[in-house]
Image 1 (cartoon, rainbow, N blue to C red):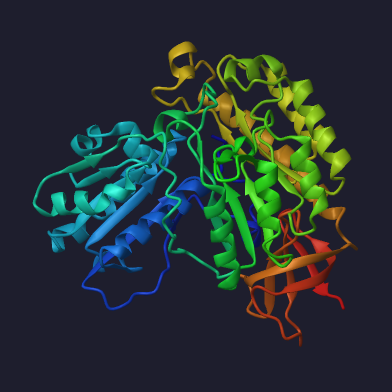
Image 2: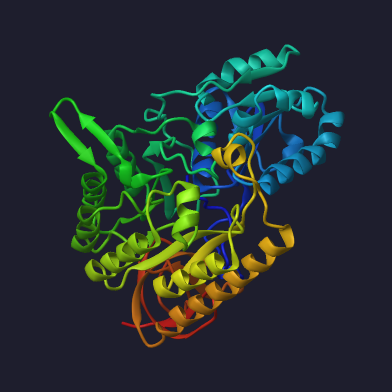
Length: 474
């Protein structure tokens, strides 16, 4: 899996997502309530929407106040040690709530639950329920078991589960943008990554259910969908009724055809799997956003081999060239790891130069964190001192800050079609939206009769490192 947790941008308006978010669904008249927080990648946020739908069917309503809840769930990430530490700290903060409401149940969902399994119940006495990413359908039974006073666990992985028949309840929804999960699991055994062990083998969701979900969202007023998967480009589904194979390029086209007013994004792409067919499909349809998240992880071939990334530095840079040939205005972002096992200073500099060559609009950047059970933990010594990792990461962040600002400067004077997502965080007099390249643009409302979900042509007049600023043009 490619990491989608933190990014370099510091301007408030530019954040594409947070490492944690509680849901903000409205409270209705239910007898019991649940509260859920999501951490880590976009897939976890999408999974929380599936969990919400399952709980709703069981008569549980949503609450934004965890002290009111009968059920508290943390949907967790195991990509980095820090993510797990954050969850453990958050669990301690629920202790007082449970002391004042002993019947309250606390559960841990997602990758951390899958990685630690029943051990989590021993380490965190506060936890009543532990559920892996493929076992959410079993939640009603697990809740019943926990209500009887027993600890409840289901962390079984599946080769078939895609939750294709469940209509997610949109959490943290702005009513404009939404996630659609199209694949689950991952077959890429990157040595640093725990995801194949926590989310299982890769499988693709029924294409018809994806198209129907996109149509339903559009009919409800949503104007942008993001197709999600650990590796969307390896999507492969056989339509047995038509005896046809649906590839990611085919699926992308079908979603784009739902309506020209529905924008389509996707994440994440593995460099080895994104094809010319996908790129030409993107070029063919104006409503497929010209933006690709293309993780590099390292700019050095030897380190890439140690990571089992299956491509060389030269091959990756050639893929960047190919993208820019077919899609000259395409935005590109990346995941980057500093200080992987045995990385030398020269190899670190290769990463910096690869960033400069690729001219990323932004990046998600980390220093290497050894994860138990991964191939890297078993094969290599984590031998780079933490202070060296942090210094290299700081240099990577500095490089990305420079590239982001340069990219934004180049957009001054240009006009972009912007999908309005809501008001600016800084002023109710301004709208905030994104262009096709996934860049955030803030502009004055003025006297235009616009609302979230509308499109506006905006001319960029100035910029910060993370945000474009402009005004509406007719």
